[in-house]
Image 1 (cartoon, rainbow, N blue to C red):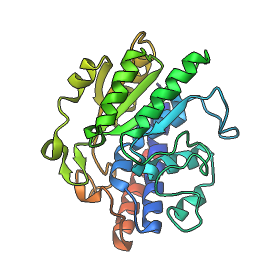
Image 2 (image 1 turned 90 degrees about the vertical axis):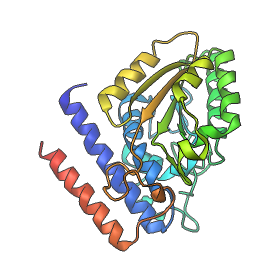
Image 3 (image 1 turned 30 degrees about the vertical axis):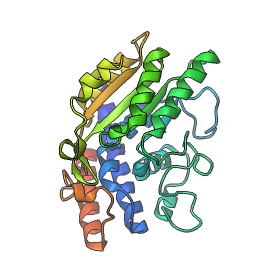
Image 4 (image 1 turned 120 degrees about the horizontal axis):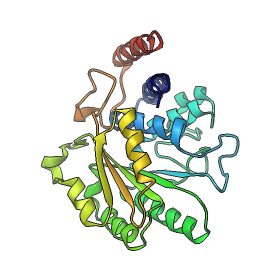
Length: 281
């Protein structure tokens, strides 16, 4: 991509991060940490990669994205809103009574959400089903799904991986948001999933490991995955939990806690400063 294209993605990602802070602060609950670590992937997919149409969210030939780590809905919602699926102003209704923006993605209420998720481990199974269905219907559709590195402690994830490999789902690409932290702390201490890349390879995946905050690296990995035939792809992204907000970075405590008024002001000031710097480049 050109430097101008990358700059625009960085600007958009900063705006997504601002939406995450806005929505979780307004809700007084939610999951900012993992939403912020996955923001650059959300931005890349919806603003550069996915074949989708905000005017026709149920378009049958669209690419699919399943947020398997459904608790990071604030990140997905902020991205969908900026992409034009629904008004950005609605983000502040997150988790409020009567809002269509529930704490976890609901495909029946939120335009652009392809699968209702939240119970960890189930999203990847749904993505596998979508990929197989697309093949059976002879549709040129790619299916992407994002899992948390704590989520892959779930046994169902590995059943789905066996399924994907057995059926040679080369139209499926899974991302692992490897920020190293889950609600209880360091994933290596809670229940280590390492070595993630070697385990996925053993299950029959074509595996790449990248910096999940580098748009060039994301694009190169996604483009490589699209050339892989005869097996599913996996991209392990090394990321920083709470990326973009200094006091949230690499802090497990921000897994599922919303910023208070003072923290909100500081976070937004930092992000606005980043945005100003990017726009001035």
